[in-house]
Amino acid sequence: MNEYTIIKTDVEDYDRLVLCLSFESLLTYIKKIEQALAIDNVDEKILIDQLLITGNGTNRFMSFSFLMEDLI
Image (cartoon, rainbow, N blue to C red; front, side, top):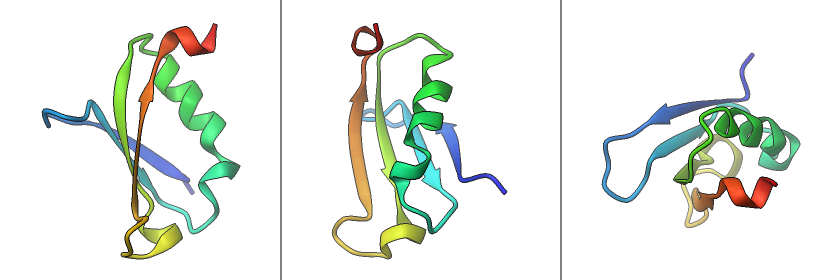
């Protein structure tokens, strides 16, 4: 089973949406997400939907800037 899926968006504020498909902590597979995003070698703004992890509360969504220069 996939732990997440990454979707390119046409939304002004975000380049991609990461949907968490597992109830496990995001920290258990965040490195896999980072590696998947690094393939395109571009700086992006990411929105993460953690519905299955946190439920439909105030901390359901999380965003971050993915910068290639931080990986060097």
